[in-house]
Image 1 (cartoon, helix red, strand yellow):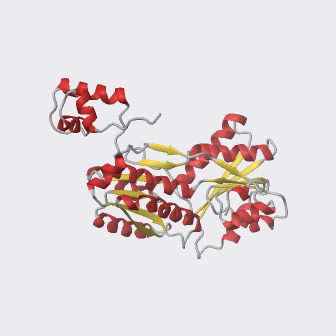
Image 2 (cartoon, helix red, strand yellow):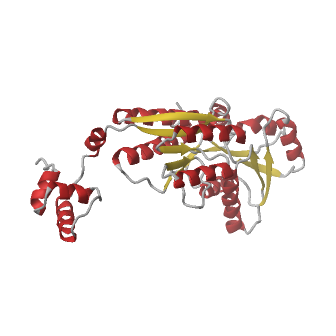
Image 3 (cartoon, one colour):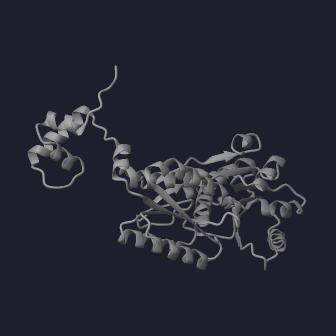
Length: 346
């Protein structure tokens, strides 16, 4: 049996009011008597009325613009899937009058981010999607969007405690706990563990907090954890820095790298001539290569493609069809091993 598609005219006849009254009730505009509003809402509920959002969008004939602030993938390959996710989402909504402008910034330079923010503001978008790599500067964007009634969504790292943003990504604290449980399963109870931050960002500390909490709750701090932060710049010899760190902490048997750069320390740690368990993040080619060789035990997949794709999709559906954007969309935390990586990498 084909389900009847109700129109505004049908609702008006069933409620005993004019089409104009139905339109005002459905779109919450203009003055409507309490009685008429109740009758319309009762009919809408009884027939389970679903508005034709696509037709409404096409009828509006308005072009909506989204600005995407994304780290330059040529400087950090972690962001390559992000660009793909943004592009594919835009293609789906282009027929409805959606335009997206990408603004790339250097993820290691605050000034680069600020310069791109200025360009975004000048373009006067209807919505903004960004990776809030720089905490203080990103909060300023959230405040600007709130003041100017611009929808904003962030992905990858959730930094705002003021409820100004819509976030798409993973629970960073829980992600650190997952890493801790993995290391716990393959090391002895009294093992010493290093948490290494390479090119530290705020969100990495949230992972470390979850990591430490896991062991604190389970062993009452019986496992000794030491953290180390290093900036991977040309002026710094990463090999020397990591080697010195490991030499001063000879008992370390496992390392948790809090971002996608675990591959940078594999060869360095290999020179220590002992088995060191490594847990890191993300499906970069070098990480996958070392995972398959058994030099990295586990990778946690942060799903950068899905984060960006959903971010654009939520903003587009809100602008075009009036759909609500979830305040927080947390993605599953996938554990990647040498045995299942082929189902994730292309």
